[in-house]
Structure formats: structure tokens, C-alpha cells
Amino acid sequence: MSSHLQDLSAAGVSIWLDDLSRDRLQSGSLAALISGSNVVGVTTNPSIFSAAIKGSALYKDDVLALKVEGESVASIVTTLTTSDVKSACDLFLDTFNSSGHVDGRVSIEVDPFLAHETAATVEQGKSLWQLVNRPNLLVKVPATLEGLPAIRELTAAGISINVTLIFSVERYLKVMDAYMGGLEDRLAAGHSITDIHSVASFFVSRIDTEIDKRLDAIGAGSPLRGQTAIANAVLAYEAYLDVIASQRWKSLVEQGANQQRPLWASTGVKDKAYDSTRYVIELVAANCVNTMPEGTLNEVREHGAVRGDTITPAIASAHAHFAALPAAGIDFEDVVAFLEKDGVKKFADAWQELLDNVSAVA
Image (cartoon, rainbow, N blue to C red; front, side, top):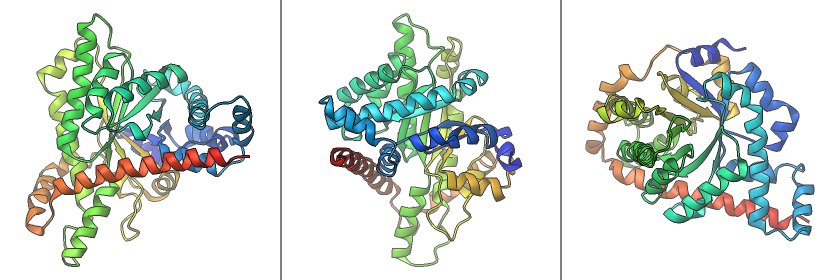
């Protein structure tokens, strides 16, 4: 087992794999990562499922059988994806129990075409929860403005949520408010909140990709290049610390609430000029999750030297970085608005590709 991965876990970061496929499940690849690489959870998204089903022959027989039964393409996709997620949940059950139900989690996302439809998101979130029927499931809901009330309602219904597509601290504060509101609603209805868990997925590398592009368009060689994504996540963690120190949160803890942990997503490095482990080793602190593609996991295993907490010592410099962005010509609000819209579109496009690929199976 890699000492770097052990060190990362010991520093308080739960390592989750950002990938799932039937090939991984049946080959033992995922089981090997659990036993040998400190992997304690899995995240999925429409792009991951599209690649998995398109690139494997293991789904073909099921697709054809379901077509013979008269199932719609959308129904077939739901059956395939929930089946893989059920198997992954079962594989992680020991981790789930040994971690006190904190880890051993597997995520499945609501239909990305519903990202701006609150009621439909709630309906499908409940449906996925019932279909998978595993205690270690997380239902992924995007942090769009329309997603926020859905997060609250689903939490109040006793469903554990992975909030995805968070790009700004401003939106993250609303996500944490929605989670706490859902817990409060559930308590007010006379129900327990002790079994509800949540993570808030803050997207990292896409921030640098977009801001570096804008800085390069303004003038090459800006000293601000490659710094915003980590600074943004650092300020998100600061916001998380403020919330868990609040009286509102302390009151919920007294009723058995579990923290909504910050999760660093999109941690694969897009710009090859940057160190391949930077979105992992520069975002280390207690009670974090880092979900990474296997390539990034391998890079961390090889040379990701963990230096302990790298987040809280960077809070002051993160504030200074953001104070310098406007003078450099960067409108951060415009950046995150673009990234949210683009993120929803990319997942919707991937979902449509998946539907088309399943439809074409013959």
C-alpha cells in the first residue's frame, strides 16, 4: 500500500475514486483499489456512465433483453446505472460500517436534464433512493438555484445527498444552508437525522482552466495563473469551518447531525505544466473528501508527498489572491456563472450520448 495514500488518509482526507464501470466491478479492479489504495468511496456522473457503457461489451446482453421486454431507452439506462451502483454499494459495505457510515459511499446523479427543475429533481431523487435501496448511497443533485430547494426537501425526506457542480463560496454557503434547513425540517416533522450524511462537491481544476484562459487572453505571463482553483477551495473550507462553529450547526449536532463534508472534485490536472498532484496535496485538511480519477490516484501514489494540513495555513493568501483578481481583469462571478452553465451542459450532453448509444445497440 502506498505510503503517500496512507499519509493522505491519515491527514483527514477520504480518498474516493471518480469512476465506475461493470468492467471495474467484475475484474476486481475496484476491490483491489479498496484493499490496496485506501479508496473508501466512489463518485459517478453522466460522463462516467457514458464512457463505461459505450466502451464495454458487458452491457450488451442486458440492453438487448430489456429492449425485448419493451423497456424505453431511458428506463434501460436507469436499470444499467442503478445495477452498477448497487454492486458498488455492496462492495463498500464493510467500509461503510467500519467508518461509522461516513465513508463507503457511492454516488448516482439525477438526470442532468432536470438541473433547473426543482420538483422533477425531488421526484427522481426519491426514485433513485428507492431503486438502489442501499444505506450507503448518495444521490447527486446539482447546486443550481433550482437545485437548492430540492437539496433541502430530499434531505428532509431522509435521503443522503452529494451536492455537485459547486464553483463559488457564495453558492456553497447556500448549499450548506439548504442541508441544515433540510435537517431542521426533518426534526420539526419528528424524525431522526442521525442516518443522514452529505458531501458538497466543489469543482477545482475547471476554475484554473477557465481563468488561465482569460488571463492569457489579457496578457501572457500573469503571476496569477494556476492559483485561483486552490485559493477558491481554501476559502470554501474556511466557510465550512465558520458554519460548523455556528450555534445553528451546534444545535443540530446535539440532535445527532452529521457534517456535510467538503469534497474536492475535478481534481485531475488539465494543464500539463502543473504538477499532477496539486489538486490533491494542496487541499489537505481534516474532514475532506477528494474524489479523483485513477490516473490522478496513481500520480499521488507515486509522488504525492503529503505535507499535512495545506488548507488552513493558506487562508490569508487565498483572500489576497481573490483581492488581486479584479485588477487583473477577471470577473469571478462571470467565471462561475459560465462554469455552472457549461457544467450542466456537459453532463446533459454526456447523458444524451449515453441514451443514443443504448438506443443504437442491436
